[in-house]
Image 1: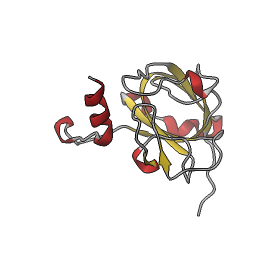
Image 2: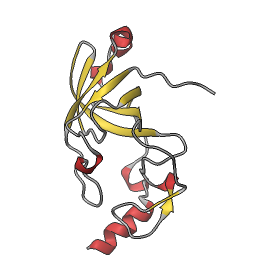
Image 3: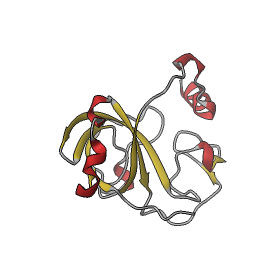
Image 4: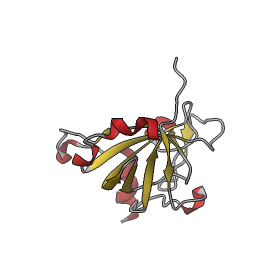
Length: 148
């Protein structure tokens, strides 16, 4: 077991969860900043060479968990691990963001979907060798087709 340690926090335009776009067709194009603590700045060397990052963060304002969730884009309940619900056994979030620029220990990004002040646990360069035609979207594809 490990105790997570924040490497910084997220500066976001969202002050409450109701402001974050959710559901089918939600656009995550809000800009924000990944503010890395100064002691971790050496770990950012060469990060700006990537176009996108995986951002691993903590749902620090979520309490408890449910093993099923009813997402805003579907009327059916799904297993929590098949959703992006914040009410999870381990309150960890994952978001892919686009790097706009880096200024010392701050990475300016597009695509934030977390609250202002959210603890940042880790970042990793986005890399995938899975071709788009092999990706499946599960129940979400069904919900999107039903809305058309």
